[in-house]
Image (cartoon, helix red, strand yellow):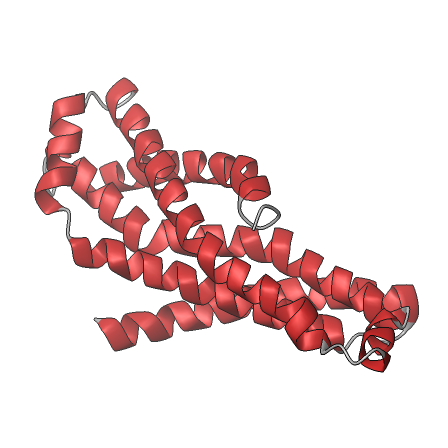
Length: 210
């Protein structure tokens, strides 16, 4: 949990800050000539909570954590450490994969909440300093259009994406072959497959829940 959650905070902080900033500029461009900028808070917060926060955080975690899980387990596989565990009567899945899986599904929603908060703050700073939207106007718009269902939907996404990332990393790690070269390939494969799966399941969740 420390490796997946706490150690990922600096990276998530940077990504979320610029995500919020970009979403504010993009929302202002979309609202231009259609609606007043007083709706900027609601436009950015809903996009962040339901889509940008969970998905971008999950992709960052897939690159940082999913790949490291595949590398760790892949190294153990090619050096026959996993075979040694089986020889001692220890189930490698229960001993190695289960803690990583449960840590991921616990920490990912927490990281998503953190990313959402930072991104909304980043959107506010851009709205205030560059677009002239005051604190009261921005956050009143956020409060007025905030829906608890959107928040829960984002947490469900985070939980599922965290589970998928850890499962893919563990699966690829356990199937690693070919020494050091195989470990490198497994690391790349884990990130690519996790990222693609996150985007696919993002679409599936939108289809099922909305």
